[in-house]
Image 1: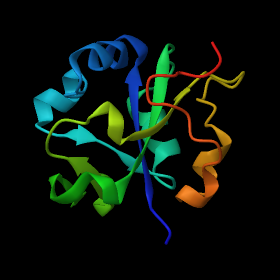
Image 2 (image 1 turned 30 degrees about the vertical axis):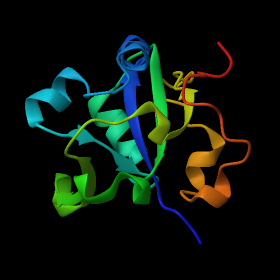
Image 3 (image 1 turned 180 degrees about the horizontal axis):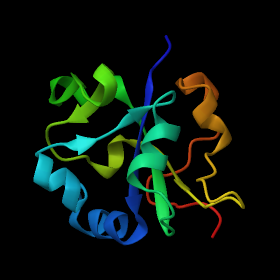
Length: 135
């Protein structure tokens, strides 16, 4: 069975606070909108460029869409595309992996290799949700 991966970008300090609290309520923008913004693999580069341009100290959370239940809704947004929005908190146990999201020399974020596949088949060696990988 193939599982659809969705992705959320957040600041490292936001994720650290979520680990302590036991749940992630989202960024200040998520809180203002009333849901946690996610992107699928195709949408992620555009979302990073539009909403996180030039930002450093970011992490990329990888989550299995099917594991979020009915709180996850695919809703029309930018250009009529349907984006995954989580109407509720994200638990650290729901996160398959956490990766640093550095800027490349061109100023764009460098996405981890597993993003290209967009399914759990493309995620090898799942990282623990509380492990940010290499510094």
